[in-house]
Image (tube, rainbow, N blue to C red):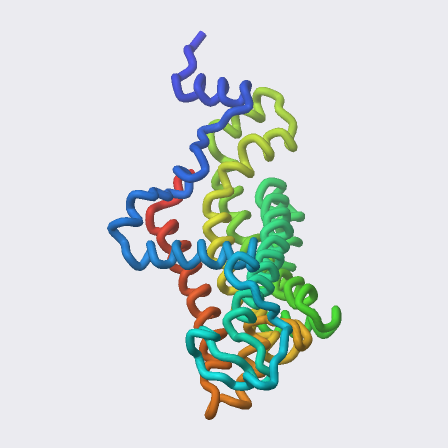
Length: 301
């Protein structure tokens, strides 16, 4: 009787114990904190994202003012020590509104990416692992969504659901489903043919167990990088829809809506549009920079 090779024996032992060749999350993403010191732009991006995280989790720690509080006597005050980012036409503090508006935009962006991630991953896993007619049907549906521009699809969905930040986030999330579905499907197809998955099937493990223990964890690194990259894009799309009037209703602070409201005063009060716009730009650039750094360091499987 021929002896099994060490690789097959190892794969079978991994399948039997429910363990596949996985690394710790940070190592699997290629994230090495020490590299930040030698990459100033990446360090600045990380620091800004940490600041945004603070604004999102606890905005009261960064400003004690009410973003809806008006003061006609301070209308259109220029940036200064009293109001770092100036005030708007109603005397509301722009810095306070940027902090709270960033929180609204980031939460909406995370909701949109979470929707895209969950639904897209589900479609990708089903299509990639099941194959056959199910793969063909699901991928044809995904391709239909791909050919429709994301902003146009978001506009169509939000027109059906109605206005509001939550509905805008759902619309942007639906538009982002195809990218996640295609990435996850490609990873599942690659992993499905691996030795440890074949050994798990041979050992009699059921399909849900194989998916949860082997396929999904090993397909997650590139999907997480895509999610990190997509948050910035989702925030930008939400800001664009809010700029067009589909998002948060006044007087609620939201970055895109703030830019839209300040455009009538752009010649006399440049700070009304500049600071919210810079906040959006820095958030998008920072998330993109961090995601690209993770992508360049390599995403081990």
